[in-house]
Image (cartoon, rainbow, N blue to C red):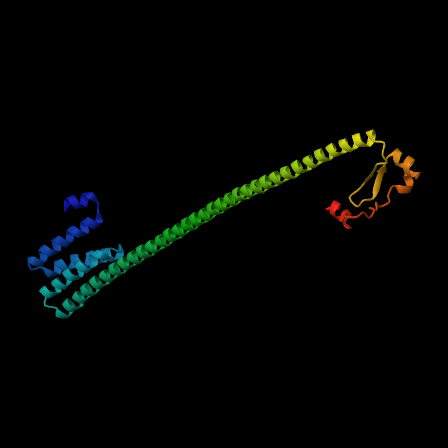
Length: 241
């Protein structure tokens, strides 16, 4: 008791006095025990130490039992039981709230995780779609380049053939013109040159001498082939072909 008082801890002091009350009760002094129990109950109520109240109600009930005051015994035992149930209910409610909060927190975290997973999946799908688009574009460009190269190669080959043919034609024409020029210069006959439609384009001076016609009179005129036995009537058409 002296040690408890020295510590100046009121709660410990009241608790120690409760044990003293138990001793008084065992010694057959219920009134002294009841006084201690009532003082403890008042202290617990003032300091809101509810968890210590039920045991105090039980002690008071035993003190009245020693005095054979059965109504008081019943009253305080009911208070003891009700308080125990209340504390248990509050503890249960607290546990339920804790569990509910934990459940809500877990559900919230799962939703967050799910949203993060969905965002990651959408990001991956977007990246995959972009990659596929890039690959498609690259393949398309590559195919287009190949096609252009193929077309260009075909065009170049075709143009080369055309130019070669044209050059050959020019070369052949130049050779023919050279031969005609030689013949034109070295012959004394009346020579004329016509186009493919047999229209006279060039005449030699000897033509004027032999025919007594001026160049302007014959240039542009169409050549008429004389009718000779055995000569085809469509000679001009065959020559044109």
